[in-house]
Image 1 (cartoon, rainbow, N blue to C red):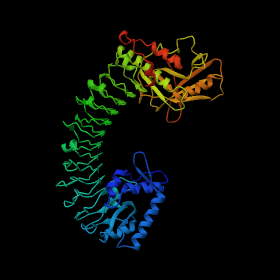
Image 2 (cartoon, rainbow, N blue to C red):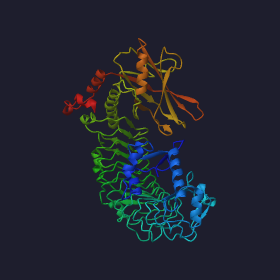
Image 3 (spheres, helix red, strand yellow):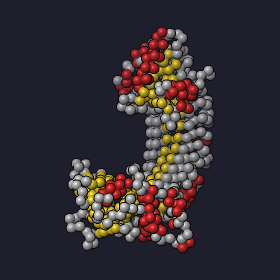
Image 4 (cartoon, helix red, strand yellow):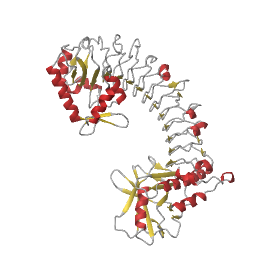
Length: 602
């Protein structure tokens, strides 16, 4: 029941300390203290997320010891069955007894099981039952392997704390199964239509996994499961509704409804307290959505048919990730700026979105590519933009943007790009920042620039800029004017080299790009930490630094097609120059006093 670290690094089962404590709890034994002793002896490791890991060799040794104990003292020992042949004999011949504490079986390693309804009747002390099919999720495996209950199942042990049964073959759990001690219930790929006909007290239940159970159409009343923390219903394609009791669960942290394709509405007037993760990816029929939580961190509405968000959406101040990619969203609420914790906003392919309201300064990445109806973008005051720390904002093929919005994006790019460069001067990481928006001109604020109309344009077809380097120059912001490009390739590659170096001494950066086509000229601003280190080291060796750039598309057959740039620019960055550049940013008089040095450390 720990994470098994196989030679290939595969994780078979992950359990956190809090769940292990519930699964193994005993009046006379402290589970947490026992885990700490095992950790001290290096038998297990416990991650920062409190997930327990055990090396596969140690686990196999433990299994061997447990097996030997069972053989030596079959009446007194607490038997743990994990050897396929032993499990086959016990289950098919009804040899179970109250000494059996756990059964773990991979059905792919055992002969077909045809079981009687009373198979678990004598195992009154069974705590852990895990029946799974490692390596396959295909329901057709039953043709060769599988577990059959032709006459149904009379009962399950009421002492069960963990019940995992992949491809559970019945339409419901036994009616006399109290489930009072159950901590985790895993029934993925099951044939369940209704979990219980009469819902039992589920006071200890924390995890419910029913993903890919395509026959289930509705959930039971969970008002008797006050400690439920995780509900996973991914790919329950027949699910048409979620019981209202779910939204009143005080401890629910994760609700996963990905690919519940029959779900049309998810509404609640109750503001949830503990829900942190809600995913509705590919709920393509979902039109009506109104769920909020004061502790929400991640909300995924990708490929849903919702057109607007709840009116109180901005009250979710802890929300960090919002994904609306490929959704039918038409407008965002005005209180988006109140999402003080929002860091990542994904609006890719929101083709009906026409206006982007003011966003909070916490935003780090904003992706609006292919928002073809987007006509206007609102930004906060310049004073508020000084507080931002964006590292990505892309507007590929947003060709309806008005001139005012394009100028505002350019100003916002200038502030954030130069601030980002400043934070990563002389550092050794791989930090990367980009801004992309429709446009044909290198912004005026870049210190060195050229276009194909300039006399400085190199006759050999390369885009080049030459200047005298300064020891204080520690970073370089690049600007490329990319033309309209029709391509089916998957890579857009930038090669940067300097004159005077050995052949092949260059730096390659792979650029962000739209999926298929660049429909018009675009401004591509970029700061790349590794590229800045490369150029800084070359600048120390040369009195004049000549930078050449080449952009090409790369096909799957590894052939290159060069892209003819419309223009190219570079801005050298040092501490002093950066501050001067940003102080020169046009600022309305009412905000002219807001340029404190303290903002550089944000």
